[in-house]
Every structure is written in C-alpha cells, then in structure tokens.
Image (cartoon, rainbow, N blue to C red; front, top):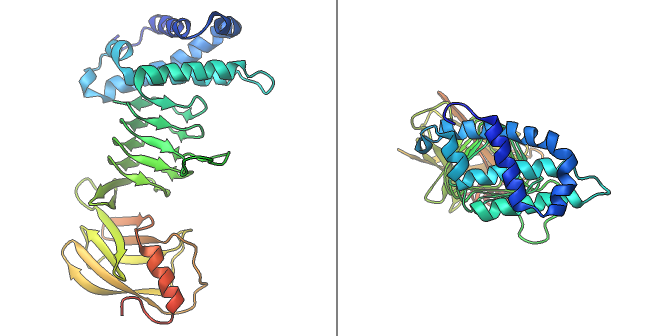
Length: 330
C-alpha cells in the first residue's frame, strides 16, 4: 500500500477492529448498518492515511506501515469508527452511544490519545506521535490539520464545565506543535501554525504563527518566512514590545472587539534594537470603560499583526482608568 490504498484491505481492517473491540450483542446491534457504515468510514480513513504518508517523512510514504504499526493512526481510525456509530444514536436509543464510547476507549488504550467520538474532525487529519493528546467533545477541526503529541484541545475549567460549546474550533490547514494547549471556545483561523508549548485562550487570526519565548507569546504573519516575530507585555507601568521591532511600526490599542481605543495615546520612552517601551496617556473620554481583554495592533512595512491579550496590558489600563486623567508610568 504505497502510493495507493487497497480499499478492500481497509474494509477488512475496519471489520477486524470492530470484532476485536465489541461484544456480540454490540455487533448484532450494528449488523444492519455495517453495509453503509464501513465504506463511509473507509473513505475518511483512506484520506487520513494518504495525508499521513505524504506529510510524515519517517513513514517514507508507506501507508501499509502506518496502518499496521502507527499507534497514533489507530486513534484516528477508532475515532472515525466511533464518530460514524455515534451518528446512528437517536434520542430514544442510546445503545449506539455506548458502542461509540467503547470504540473510543479502545483507541485511547492502543494509542494514548483521547478523542471524544462527538468531536468534528475534517478530512485528511494527521495525528503524529499522538500520545497524551486530548480532543474534547465539542471540538471542531477543519480539513488538512496536523497535530503532534501532548496537545490539549480542551475547556477552560477543570471540573463542572458548562454544557454547550466549550472547546476550540480549528480552521483548515492548522498545525499544532507538541504540548500546546488550546483552551475554551476559541477560534483558530485557517493556516495557523502554533509552536510547541503555547497556551492559547483567545482567538488567533488566520495566517498567523504563534510561539513562546521566555514565557512571552510571539506571533508573526505566515507570509513572512524569515523573522518578523513580535510579542508584547506590560511591566512596571510600561508597555513593552519585543522581537524584531522597528520605529516605523504603527501601534494601536484595541478593545476585546478589536476596535481602536482612540482615547489612549502611546508615548515611546525606550527605543532599542529588539525592544520598544511605551507609557500610556489617557487623552479623552472615549466610551470608557473598554471591553477587556485588550489587544495590540502592530502595522508597518510588510507587517500587519494583532497581538492577542498581551500579559499585564489590561490590568495596566484598568489602573489608568481608575486614576485618570493622569498617565501611567509618570
């Protein structure tokens, strides 16, 4: 199974997984649905397999090797089975839900990855080295996404999370590095690259790269192949912009709805290579208080990026609002 998929072999593999996982009563419950269910699942699994083979150099394009021996692919295969079985569950018949959970748990045991059968995952999904990855019930994942090990697509809280949409939505062609955590009902746009160990709790716009440097989250537009990473934080009553900064960049404070805060002005106090520092002046009453958290828009030659909720910025502006019309930072 090199550059093509033997669909008959794939059908047989799916049936073997069902037989090895389920009780005879479960198989009897599915009997009238298998003729439609197996080809449907096989179509998705074949696309996942081809995507894995083409994007993972270690497999050398050998789809049969991935199908037979890659534990992370077992997680995807069992998710596809469980998700389609779950679709058979009606309000008055929860037996299919129980079967879906059994299949999901088997995938977890074999791979170390937990994918809730109700999660919605698009086509050509690749889960590489997936041990420790968790994908929650209300997750939505677009097409052509690639996720590594230890990734959590989870809710913001720990216990007693509310019902309803509480997990992330990923656009198309999103790549997530090992150990990253995306928490809450946030939206990750198309073509986003999230580096390992990032913690994402706010929306990330399309065509963005996100990484962590010394606990500061840095971003750049994905159109820029070299350099261009920027990050921001507030400390000691100053706003700091770090990374590949330039005096020609235009910086604007935005509220939680990404509307400019024209009542606040930035005054540069330090201009160094890789570091700009500002204090913030309150200039006019412009519909205060703004909706938090605040964001920072940076634009300039070949650059247009929004830094989401820089650490400390909202708290610093909140203090400014309490002491207006004075400026923060003296």
